[in-house]
Image 1: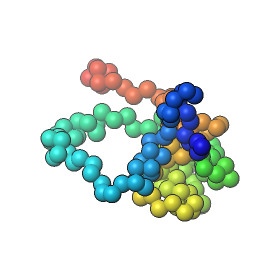
Image 2: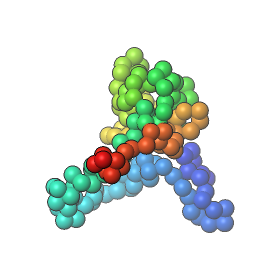
Image 3: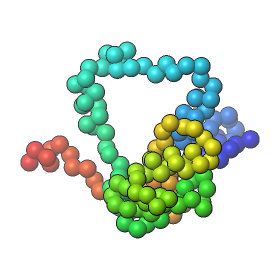
Length: 147
């Protein structure tokens, strides 16, 4: 049986594709203890960590080209919606908050006790998860910044 959010990668094999949050939830259900390696375990210095974090592209609602006032729909329940408030925040249950906080509140309302959630995984626009939408605004490269 294949549940919501999981699709079979090949019909003749037992391989499936699933969102990272679903995989994390499955691992947490069967985990005995958290053994995620720390930066020290991996010999990553604080300077290297800052470089790694600086290279990450920050996904925002504005960066996806989503206009203010747009309604987003929760993946797990189409009756649950939020409204884009600005380039980084939404209005959910009458309060302005981050997309991830809105997703986490909706998840908690469903009875899950997850400590975090990636909002871009749980909200959709026109039936597509935000995490699957391409960035509309290109991030300037280092060469352009130096010019």
